[in-house]
Image 1 (spheres, helix red, strand yellow):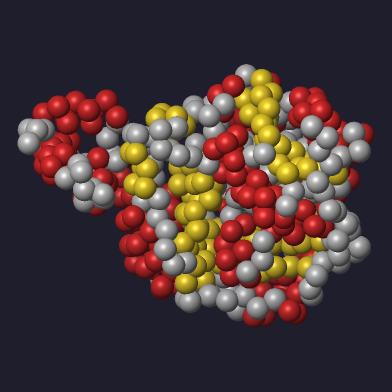
Image 2 (cartoon, rainbow, N blue to C red):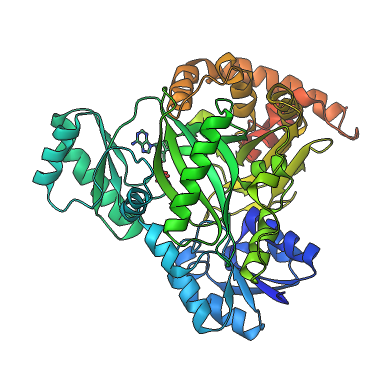
Length: 505
Ligand code: ADP
């Protein structure tokens, strides 16, 4: 087994990996940018080294600097987490050159599945259904225009190098085609340095359901069940759950089988995720493979009882898979909410800043993977994911009730978060009946924005009252939920201003 692992990431996922190392008796080495000197992952690791300025290009994305720390500290393995370099084959290659084990798939498997079009070709070879569209990048706009009308509008233009919803454009008609092609191409170029696009038929109201796969280095690949990720804002997952409320045994078996044959076709090892869209008739279509750990991996861990990060480390060290898929006994229901420093009332604008007070939920069935602490300043330089709140319960109804309870306990002061948005989504009857698809939340948000937008005067009056109550109880161990809830919706300066108006008793 490894002695020391370089944690090539930051924030909550770095913390998650450091914790797994600690439990396995493996030392962890953190790296950090100048903006992250005081980060939680730096405090929790056994060793930590600065690798450059805040700009990710000059720190977390700089392979040279990562390898330099790994060599100097004599790490024998490196874990990339997700984001940053996690899906860049240059990183496993650099690791191989330095005789450091990369915890993840091989560079070749990453390449085979790395671009959306090459992934579609692998799916085709493995006889896995794909969304109708092109298998190759399209060079000329004239060809693209012709293909689009052949497939029939609406179509989706997608970046070959795509990720995070970037370089994706919905085109409803031929008239919109040319400008969408230009916009998608330049967005893809800015995000990935690759402007190539391809076309997919746009599925109306699909679900996003993905299969967690796992392979060892001895040829075993298994599927660990599904995650339902249809609740998305602008093609980005917001709530994930397992099992999917629409799943039954025969669909699950078919999707797991498809995911495993695709992974075998690509000679895949370690953790990966095969993403599918599922239509109203329960047909499923391959979307892409994420060749890494996913943000939403804890919901799979909660229902299977597995630890995916430890499994990744063991598999990278050459250990064979310790069980067959038939032995899996998934239990209960898990839901994850992605807690972001952002302002839903202001078009989800990121809300970095100092966390002036923090109370995190706990208790039965609650897990929180976080990278923050009270007094820490959330930097503006990175993705504003603060934490993942995960609950587990016997069934979906109880999991929703438990998530409500956990959200009510959660208080982050000083910055805006989307905690309250989750309360509202989880109270929605359609959500409760699991009647949603990938465009559902966007429609929900635009429908609710009018009623969510507060009347400023009424809100201010309520805040002054709440803060007065808060000030009155400030020596109490826990502030009243109404006060914390309202106070959390204010900027820090505005809160101080209002506090000054509260009569001191
Ligand atoms: P990215 O890698 O940029 O996140 P994906 O291919 O994984 O892009 O797609 C992200 C989301 O975009 C999907 O979960 C779904 O909501 C939507 N989407 C992608 N392709 C299609 C399609 N052909 N039809 C309808 N929706 C799609």
